[in-house]
Amino acid sequence: MSTIRCLIVDDEPTARDIMNHLLEKIAAIEIVASCKNALEAIKVLNKTAVDLIFLDINMPDMSGISLANSIDKNTKVIFTTAYREYAVDGFDLQAVDYLLKPISLERLVQAIQKYRSENRLDRPSKDYLIVRSDRKMVKINFADILLIESLSDYLKIHTKEKIIVTRETISKIEKELPKNEFIRIHRSFIVSIPHITSYTNEYVEINGTPLGISRTYRDTFFKTMEKE
Image: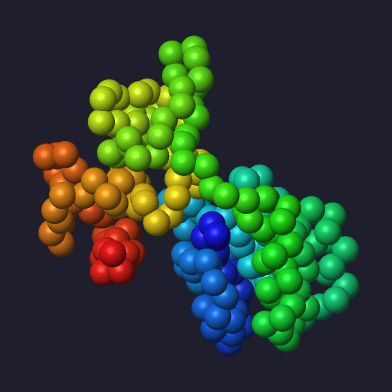
């Protein structure tokens, strides 16, 4: 089962804690961050791949509706609110679902299953990536990828045999990679976990090449490696 990378956005601390607690009970869910407003959420979205946002509607400064209108269409939204009248707005934005507070675990599971069904996440995962490079489509097996490097508006995909250059964003590619095999260590680098030969507090080594771990991704990296 594919892991869903989730973001919680709610201006109420208690609501964030409850959602976090409920999501921890559900299999194949990774909580990327918990934000108290839309501006915090935008910062997270700009540097981290997120599949699904649990988004409160009625928030100060920038509403959940406004945030939903501004995000990448590949990131899906489940609205959470205490006000039933906002449901129409939520479905107008083609949200996956609308959850009325207080939210039960059963209702939350239903919403996540709806997301999985709509995005066909219950099917067996493919073991390759297809990118456009040099005016043709190139198939790259996940097992052959050593690391992915972001350079401005294009990527270098380093494999065992060669480097493949493609015009794509690192955040989009990150969503297509199996979470148990690849990890982001820097805004410019995703590395293959099986190909990590050594690491310290400051860097990882892939195929003899040291790559720096940024502060943003350090905690997640070490938690992941501890599970290996």
